[in-house]
Length: 461
Image (tube, rainbow, N blue to C red):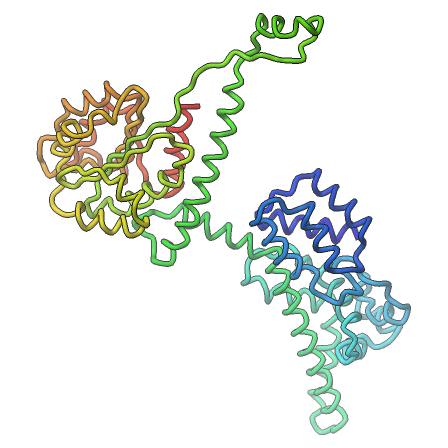
């Protein structure tokens, strides 16, 4: 019983549910009280102790129906006892060889009898034991289905059936042999179908989430300008998940660090009425700024894919970043924060790229516009985040304004989509901007964006 529950908890964790060891212990106790007999009672009980959020409750409801999907009389992982004659006929499942099975009966005929038994419990028990021997719960990709199905059949002793089938097929002139061959083929087909169905259910329980994580990791590590339309849809969910992870991480860091050091004098004074016993502990607290970011983004054609995901990332962090401003330019600079807050994100991005992303890129003019119209948005608490390749079409980059910007802001972080080997080539002015940047790095993937934003937020923790 506990083995079945342990495997189910592992499936929940692999699918993304945060099941703690204490909750796993509570689940064992709950099952010890309600048992496996009443399916809905078991489902509701596990849902109470293992699923905390609405998302986790939906996940539990789906996985429970998949995991405990066979006959109620034999819960998954806890097969009912097998009778002596059944144990003899299914000896390969207990570590015996096909030859040993022959001493207690024909192994091939045993499989034919199993396939034709019409007893779902008996077939389910055999499949469960074969799956355990084949390690089906380790499946991670749908493409492994055929491999694990074959391993299950081998655990059942399918070689003996196939060997007997070949013998019967060789006896072509014998009507009885042909009839036996047909019965053997039908049994093999039926068992193969059962094995495939079992593996598919196990994949949904144990493998689907692993496949999803693999695909998400692959997309997150892919260059943003190389994403297909299908990748773009997946990337939206990946970016949202990364943003939530960053928000939780930095909220935890701030909570720990804001506690500060023990204030001994104030603690003693506060507990004078308790004979000095420190019931009320007072900490020295250090004021920390809330994150304030101003993003200045080049939205010309070569940089547009990176801007889309940077802004998506930033606006997913709105609860963490107290003050967020966004400006976009190719030639002239425009405040796009209002559009991003007012419109649907995709609509706003299409509007920004269409209205601003045309024309020759001019970093100098963008800096002039920033100083003339939005200089008050930058102060000693602001991190200025620049996303661009620094290619200014041989115009004056106005390094004097950028130096003034760097002196005015808390930090200046520049993310460049181009690799470092191309910096300073052609019309690239990025090496001239570098001395005034707190941090300058190549940024090509969502992982690079996450790392850069993590580093920015860390400066405020």
